[in-house]
Image 1 (cartoon, rainbow, N blue to C red):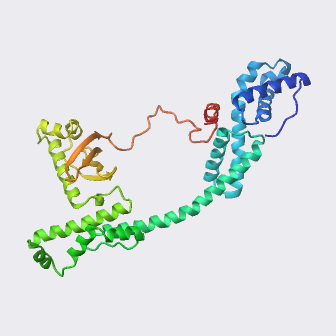
Image 2: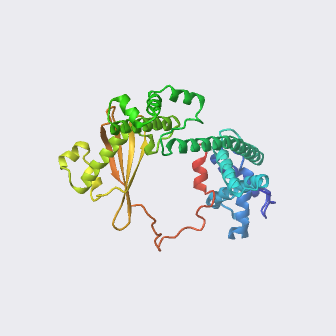
Image 3: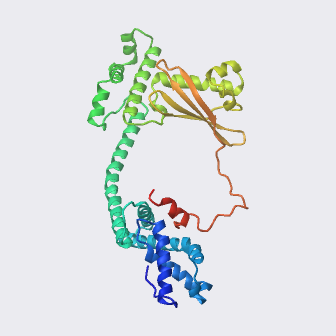
Length: 364
């Protein structure tokens, strides 16, 4: 901040005022050399206030009362300095805003003495920009990888009998090729016709078709899990999928009141309450929490066209028996109008540094 000359008061009084401000500043900001900037900010406020008519009467109470606002002025100025430097380099308003805020946060949390705040801010702002663009280069590689995986996901989940494993990393590809799921898949597709496959198994064509579907689904499930996918019906193996479908049918019976309360309580005491009034499931989704634990979400559209989601925290054991750990009914989803009596502050969303925020971030 640009320095101002001494206001109309004798040198002794001026020195006392500056010294007192310096003491206040050093107590609050022990690592940061802010005394001159805060003193200037307070003296500017003094000039603008009615107290400037009698500067010799400047009291400690007045200094304490304007100290928080002076601190805010100083740090908002620091952010502007950092912001302008970023904007000059990047021409990116959003990036400059984020970078300058991060620079101020780092200044406040510094545990090392900072004598020249402006030089420190410039250096840290510069370093943050360098890290950002370095990360951007890495992000490009990540973006390309995600695009490749998205294409692979589409190929894996595409309808049909063929499951494409091209595009997997060598390690994952080898893992898939050596798996029992892949061997079962290869066997199922090695026959010229379903009839030949059924004959080899000594079963009916209907059973052979189910075996073939099972082999394809199990391989797709293993592929997606190997790729790190956790939120899709396709991650479920054939037996897991059927177990979930059976569980959903049981939930519908509860919603329609077709099951005995004691039967409901065996699964979970809250199930009947959660399913109350849900007599139809319009859609469902599933997310894997860990090896055999899942979050099952069911979607129901009420007669008033209001969507409701119920969530079930379930475990599938080795025999694919479903047990319920917890369940909850979520609030009705939808747009909610802002009441007329709610006032949104004009400064909402702006990066202003309040005194409370500044103090809360000190050395955190």
